[in-house]
Amino acid sequence: MARGDLRAARRYAKALFNAALKADQVDSAGTGLAEITAAADSTPQLMNVLRHPLISRSRKTEILRSLFESSVTPLVEHFLFLLVEKDRAGMIDSVNAEFIRLVDEYRGIANAEAVTAVAMTDSERDALQQQLQTATGKTIRLTTRVNEEILGGLIVRVGDRMVDGSVATQLLRMREGLKQVKVN
Image 1 (cartoon, rainbow, N blue to C red):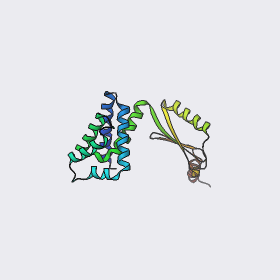
Image 2: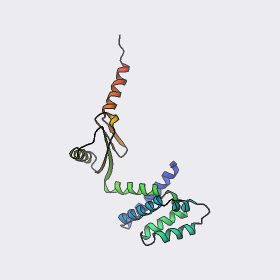
Image 3: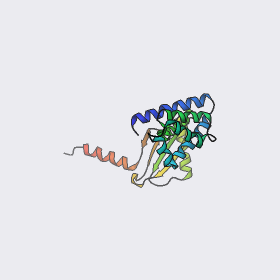
Image 4: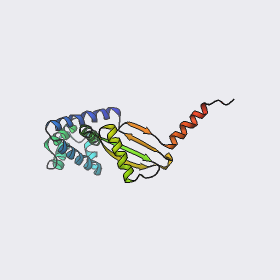
């Protein structure tokens, strides 16, 4: 996605979030937006219609109304019509992702990823999650994955911050340090 499209998706998501917050409909707006995004992802024809320049905005609105009128709140429905009116309906997935991020931020939830060389036990995972929650002051939604190439240790990402305590990185730093040493 182009940087301008990402900025636009953020602006639209923020507008929906603020309207939903004011109307006390954050959960229902999130559910409706997720439903629309899932339908768009699972039905490529829907996205083709929304992006097609020869299909009128009024026809696109009719199609969307028939699909979602009974399943989403009027707030989400009007938001969707606004996206159609502004020729931005094709970015619904990006708007949804940004809306989720805003809701998480508002609720004090942060996503974290831990990468290890071997699978973590449940108790290790729980301990790490607790430490991250203490360090950040947020509720942590932790995912883990295994990457044997790091050899050992741990790489943790929380939001846009990363701490690399992997053995592979430590060895690389050591190697770079040794290259700087002059031997006489």
